[in-house]
Amino acid sequence: MLTPEKIQNVLKKDCINLRFHARGGQGGVTASNLCVEAFLGYGICQPRFGAERMGSPTESYVRLSLDKDLIRTNEQVYNPQFVAILDETVMWEVCVTEGLPKGGWLIINTDMGQEEIQELINRKDLNIATLPATRIAMDVLGRNITNTIILGALIRISHLFTLEQLNEAIRKRFKGTIVDKNIEAIKEGYEATCVYDVGVDVDFDAEAKLPWTQVDPFLPGYKDLDKAGVWYTDVNVIRYGSHQVKTGSWGEYDIIWDKEKCTDCAQCWYICPDFAIKREKGDDGLWHMVGVDQFHCKSCLNCVNICPVDALSKNMKQKPGSCALYL
Ligand code: SF4
Ligand code: SF4
Image (cartoon, rainbow, N blue to C red; front, side):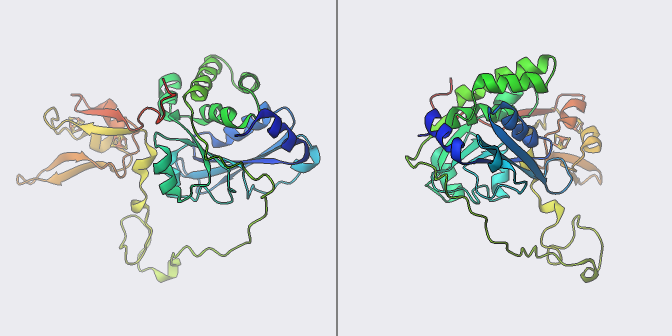
């Protein structure tokens, strides 16, 4: 288990590295900024974005040290000792354990338990901390922004800074009621954190740049295609079309359809930005609503809000935290 003394000793002669995994719009970059602002020492952070689209996976990196010469590099972090995952669904798309040494810490916004996570990441040598940050965010902030809440869990296991130091950084960065709400949410995150310590100390000397490798995305060039576009194209031509992306995993709610109440007015079908309202042609030759495509529904709630007869409702996907410590 890490202690404040041990962390201070490492920081005097070395860097401590963190990596944040999130989705565009969830505030992963702000989380890394706040780490640097809350830390009493020297720090640097930088983001890495993929496709410019809300909801696509993002990464941001933080280096912290008490020696300013050690944090001058601008390159990304290849061997973090702490990895924080603001949205558990990125774990199915990105190798979140890459470069994480034995005894490293994974901090995950999830209601999954230790064994389920170990099976998913195929490693048992990592320490894990979990918290139901989405539930806390929806309860306290009213939005699924988990970036500050995940820092409560980081404080609990890393001792890199204190709750009060983070609160001070929050006061400097935000204004108005959002300050108190975030401070409350961070405290809840801190208290709701489940800690699964496997008894292996993180190896702070394990940092080494990984060899560069060529990535083959298996995508044909435009000259190889007999038709343009990737939406609903033949999977034998393009193996990875956007329709195959499980955008449904980005949302925090399941949308429930009540067939008995539905009057088939089609307002939800018109307003859905993701074509996630399913309709089928009936024997009468007309199209009728038959349900919600959970694979693509991002739970924007447009359909719930527009339905005139309350035939659509929402149900929070994330269950309460997985450990008994969460009250
Ligand atoms: S919640 Fe949004 S994405 Fe999902 S079915 Fe309703 S309108 Fe479409
Ligand atoms: S808006 Fe409501 S009533 Fe109209 S089709 Fe959709 S679910 Fe049915």
